[in-house]
Image 1: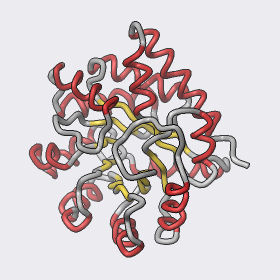
Image 2: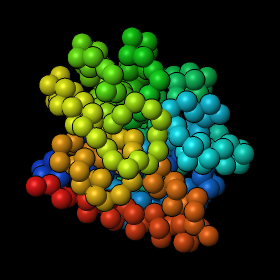
Image 3: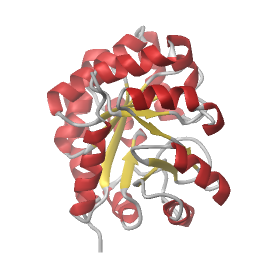
Length: 271
């Protein structure tokens, strides 16, 4: 079975045709449990997310802030395995029909087997993979497997990325480019600043791929701000936080759905 890169491309293109940014949500698989994680992702998509990234929990998540680290820890203590991540992708996609990607560090993919991971992700209906710590120079084996199985390979660029580096990274990627809004780890912040806008401008000069901005967006106002200059707005920690702070699962699902709705309104507020 081929993966869903075409679905991802069409959803991002549809958002652009509506003169708005796409809303991309993130949640680690297995949080709070595997089954409840699927319910939470479904709530995010029902609430207004266009695309979802399913995180593969890692014991040393160097790019993740304390909120996502907490969720990863809960998932790992629950015994999360790669098969559970793939199940999460499969069920979320089957229930909603939306494009679902996996966001993972490279080590688990390498250990599982590159060809096997690409084949199994495609069989689960996955749209692609975001690999924040895979250097583009070492990515050829993965990219070939991904292309063969109809999966997007999404690379991360940062404000520190020089123009020649942006050109190399964007030439190798597919689906979209993940633009980290600032230097540092994931988490909600007071503002998403000028650095992000400058990075999107420089990245767009190198590629026709959509550029989606993540790290730090937590509310509708920030989503609207980023939507002025980006093709997509990526939100993770804010969704995780709603689930962590909820007194029970039903309240958490309602909070996640509400946040998705508010963010979806935000990304539609282009001037």
